Amino acid sequence: MTAPVHEARALAYLARQDAGPPPVDAEERADWRAELRAAHDDYRAGRAVAVGVDRLDTVRRAVRVGRYDAHDGQGLTEALAAVEHGCISYWRTTPYGLVWIDNEV
Image: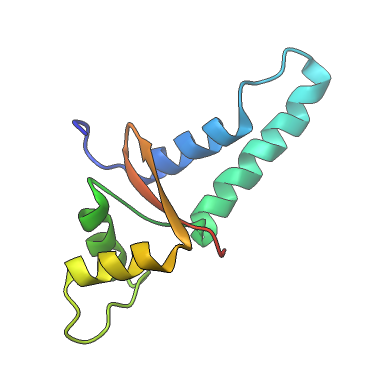
């Protein structure tokens, strides 16, 4: 990734990708905007755990802001392995950073 990490833009990008292209029909655009807003709110409310440069950086940022609790003495590499082993998360790449998505939220 060459651009700096920008959480707000990354989440907006994901919401836009989820909503798809805006419909041509003006009457359907209001529903599309509501879907776009709902997806964005969902990511901001906790579905997106953190945004970083790579997986390790993303876990580091999640720990730093209190979104992920690394156990005492657990290094970031071990925390990343635990996250990946749990199979409740996945990662999505955006032009604004790698986003850690929580499937359980």
